[in-house]
Image (tube, rainbow, N blue to C red; front, top):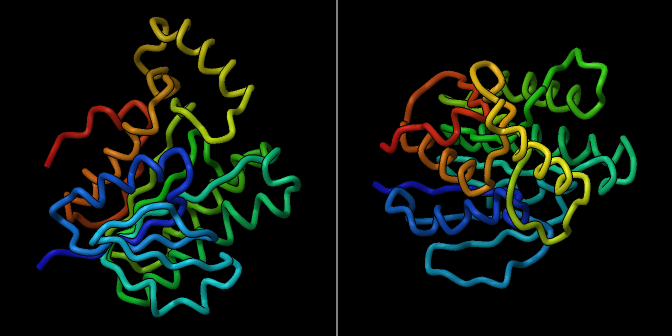
Length: 220
């Protein structure tokens, strides 16, 4: 029996690369996308659940899936405040995990960030670390946490800082070897493909995928 995938964050850099992979995959007979607005896309497999993410509880019964892909995330500048950032990168993610696990989903595949650490002095990294710690407590059979370095790809809203960082890291890339490999930039498409491959493993337990591993994950 083919499975159902649920994707949150389909309009983001990674989510927009992941959605067509899920729709094309023979693993899934249904792909549910949950978000704040309707995507300009139709597909026989696609079901869209449009809701304010503050009200995920109200659509809980529409979020029944086997594999849950969470690509939600923002930046401090986009969010506008620490409180708004925390809501997107912690509350929405953890709420989605809890609701879908309650619906008997078996796998969670969630995008975090390099440097995620609940004890970090950097607010961004601390929130990502707190999110990881929280979702680890949710009773999925398998939890895959992805910690990409700087993401490469075309954003709907370009970020100047990331463009500058990407150029700098590309110049430094020959020097990023051994333990420094995890700092190499990674494309959003590579992260999306790695997420699907991880789901296809149908394993168990908690796995953390660092940036340098994402392009090396074997095909199933």
